[in-house]
Image (cartoon, rainbow, N blue to C red; front, side, top):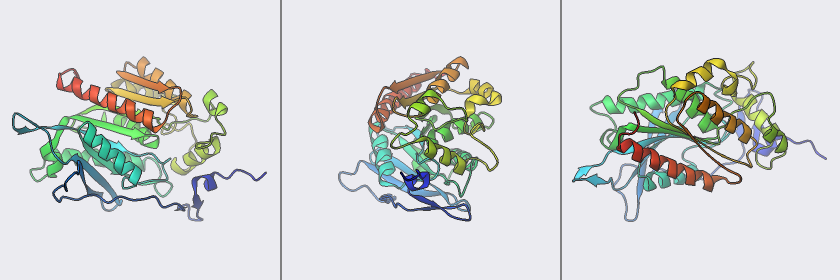
Length: 322
């Protein structure tokens, strides 16, 4: 029997200089641009440079027709999105991510700012958290700049900004939300965070990790390699970026988090850690909602996400987020 190779499983090659060669090219979808929507187009999108020196950028999605109220353009909630990919893969221009954000923008409706953050190992943590803060500060600038991006400045409700991430993207959301506590981002208000299958870890194995160690999609050797590629050199899986539950300062800071939704599924090796995170948030007094299915995946995540976001938006509109 051949030895399991996590790099082969991930379809990547590790180069001598520490970078990766990604062997699979995923289908891409270009943004529509600023042009007028074509017939039948429900969502338009455009790409904006975030930091040219870091080669980071944003893809903004908005409904083609902005709703109005009493003949006035409605202000829409703004969702900042961070994609999955185990730190090392994917882009917001990948077909799957692009279409998911189109659907989210259309169905809520909302303005979506999808962040194309830097990938590991070329950029290790906390670089991805830095990119997330850059995105938040960019949104803040649009709100205060007379010449700010019109899609953001004219249509976004800066009191209803949500951060949403899946897997490593959820890790970015959690760590960035903790960073935001120490910064003045007004007039932007983070109304809530959504963590879908947050990618967190630790050196001590949980029952679900041991039970699902040979998971077809996410086996333990792959999880370990992803952390080796993403964490700062010289650290291990008990570093606070990976194991926030093991850091007393992080746990104390969690008390200041606002509304939080955590979504998970029984078939995920990390389910025990995600449930422990929910328990910790509750103990810290956070307004947390948890949605865990025994089985599920993208479809279930989408269902809970849509329900939770719509509930959060309604509560905000009724003035219930004091």
